[in-house]
Length: 146
Image (cartoon, rainbow, N blue to C red; front, side):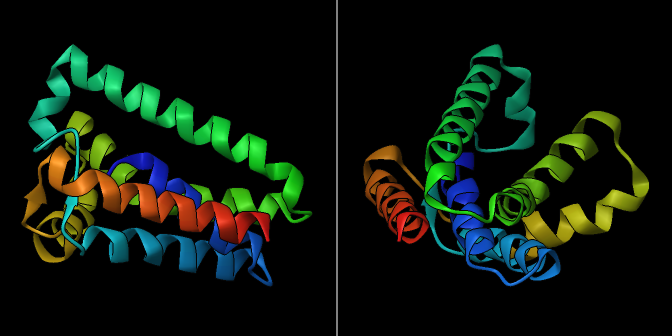
């Protein structure tokens, strides 16, 4: 799944969490839950990160996520918890990126859990998966606002 739904769901969870530990744990768990569902993604494998066009997609996805969260910050007083939830929700993908670039041995088990055990094997085409991403983002924004 692309970064924006992960970050928005994590932010919504964090905004409604009683403390930082809960915001982090639930934000992290939300990543794995969303990745267990069939979804569309703009890269198929980590080796696709070698293509400059895919790195641009990730950059713009992250930029959109951060921009959306900054706009939504005004709706919630618990800014720190919101940011902790958003960070935790994209942490597994960040670990994947670090492991891909630096091949760090202690990150391998986390990477294998994410990609081989939890991540849904059926990746949808954009045509099949865009609506699900929009719904997830919309629901997260509603939860953030109210």
